[in-house]
Image (cartoon, rainbow, N blue to C red; front, top):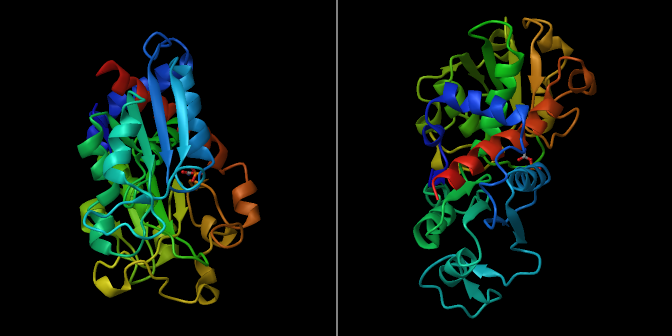
Length: 323
Ligand code: CP
């Protein structure tokens, strides 16, 4: 594997899920693969889970790990070609990428949507430069549009907890005071549509996700109706994807105070099939989900986060095998 961005990059999902369980049985059995190999993890944005789980996965495989927080201690990077660099940015990504690549064998990058241009975000301008100029395998640790390590961990978690062959999985929009990117819902939709689940998305009108990720998904604007009979409820906020109104891209369309009935509570969970609750974390309690739901025995937020180590290890293992 040279790039890990989309669900197709992992190949057959049944094989990938079986590999995840093999990793869980003994995560240290491939230490020889990473001997004298270095993973460089580059963060343009904050992280707790991705940072720790990916480092742990690399260490499980015997790799050395270097973590770079671009905005803390490195030179400020210019990302646009043609810019006269007379501002606060001292180095260009076009030099920085090959330099960073010379110190490592595999690169992971986190670079969120900037909300300056829908076109730039959805073209993955930053990550594609790493793919083009690094000469190294590149995996996405949440980009402008996707978060595949999270979606893979979510799928592993659903597979481990499902009680029927084809569970109903509902992804619901929930309120948030700030504008958040669409990377998590995009990837979750992409992976659920590739998996053997009955997938439904519910959100207020105006938050339609990009068709490249949700084509074929059932959309239900009535949240209560969507929740009926659900086996898994996956909550997430996202800002306007700008599909129907590009000028609204990245905006919060309504004052969140008027949207609090979308916060996942016992009221909605009561119409589900005793559903498990899922969220990628970090989560704002009593905005996205009530204390009672996230603390209930049906909440999977901690096993989900623990599976981030497993999804990262499968991806790094595949990349090491292909070096
Ligand atoms: N879910 C997730 O990616 O968490 P972090 O932002 O803390 O890495």
